[in-house]
Image (cartoon, rainbow, N blue to C red; front, top):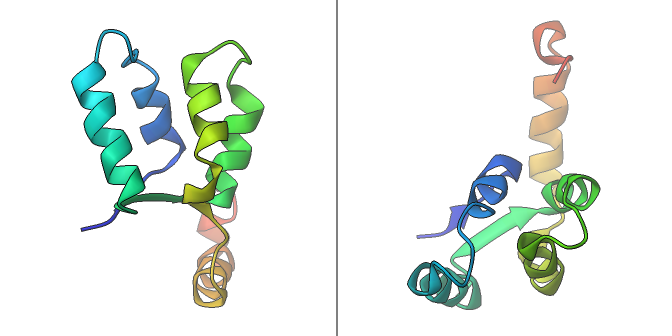
Length: 91
């Protein structure tokens, strides 16, 4: 199973400090290494703009930048269709 993390998921991870939650981070890093955790490039950009430089999650995100993948053509088309609906344009 692959887990796709959004911006909020990473923000919640920030509450789990590595020194206090070593087992969690060990398992999480293992999942990342096994390509079971991914995200998209837009999430990286959002995190980059909101995380302070001295925050533990900032360095983790930068170290694992390769999990933040560009959207495929099919995904981009799906988002385009969703955002063409007036109700969703404020997203």
